[in-house]
Image 1 (cartoon, rainbow, N blue to C red):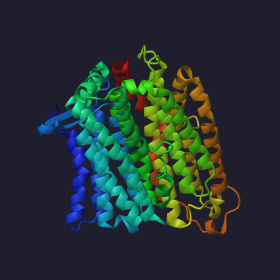
Image 2 (image 1 turned 45 degrees about the vertical axis):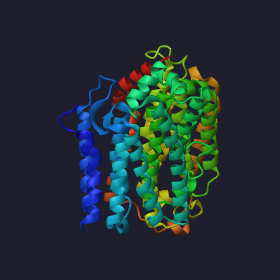
Image 3 (image 1 turned 60 degrees about the vertical axis):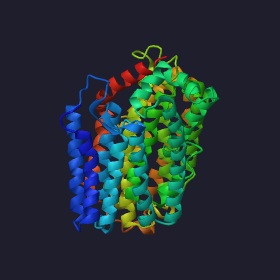
Image 4 (image 1 turned 120 degrees about the horizontal axis):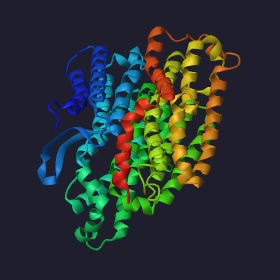
Length: 511
């Protein structure tokens, strides 16, 4: 227990800002910027105080909340969750600054932005399922209204589709976890993890829920899996993805793709795999096959798009598919027989690092789309774009850097995480690695095609008067671009936070 509740302060700080904007006629831009900077400063303090030599939870806060239901207020972070907290703290200022003055002056828009950040912080730090689930659902509310009220095209239909898919998956997950609670008598994710690791959770299930056997455990596993797979998303739970990304305000999509999509993969690591180790082993082959199908499908779907937003939406699905592939393959019992030396460590380190790297690069790309559409309302339609390198060389250079980071160019952050994933997956599941390679090749194809169509050739009539980025816009993108370069050259800056957590995680999961 820490004397100063840093995680609670961090989580409730943006919520306080949202409440202030909702109640008082305060200057929206100043309030959001102040609370965003405050959250970033607290995250920096957490990182400075984080003990790199331990794999356990740190900054733990725990207090009874609803004892009759086994619900505690329980928060804490390890290297995995700390990196995602940092990602959330970095992305909100980026998303806010590219939203445009017509949006950042609206109190309701700013309040929903801060509410979404609070929900994300809570999701990545809560360690009791009910506590975690409240944040999981809370994030859906501001995202829904941000899309519906300030989106484009069919924004109402896209917001409804996003809500229905996510809420439907959440119901399946909640029902499954209620059965787990009836079995174990607790919602504490750490206690449930320990019970599952010893086999006690699986043993209790037929005792507490008579008439059911292994088939119930598989149903519970699938219920939690579906709830998380919708958020990633994985095929075939991705139906909401393209409509939502193409209709949401680009600044909101920075948070959707950069941070909210990580909630699903984080749930895999924090809930699904630790609580259902036997079911994971049983279904590992089909799950890996589904992931390979998902990431290859997403790459070809992106190649077929003529809309920049939809192309980047499927690109996001493709890149997160590699992260899921790495963490699933790392769960193979043979891979974890010796966690300290196994390629599973490499695969899982790459998968977790991919979450952070993808959040930065995808967030920067959609920030560039926001700046593009601020100048050209039809900017997402590739048919209207071309020749921007000649009229806006700074914009072309900065967006080009983000594209090459997403492509996995050596020297940029996207390369190291994908390299680690495949370096770990190839020795453990060579067939899955080989079948995933077309996804890498097609990703390079459509991203280079994007560069050619948007920036090369003669300027189209719509682009001839395009104004290059100003100093404020360059400064807005600079932190994300700096991180791409830093982690491309010195990935150990992030890996030193992750390695002890990953070693401990695989040791606990070892058969």
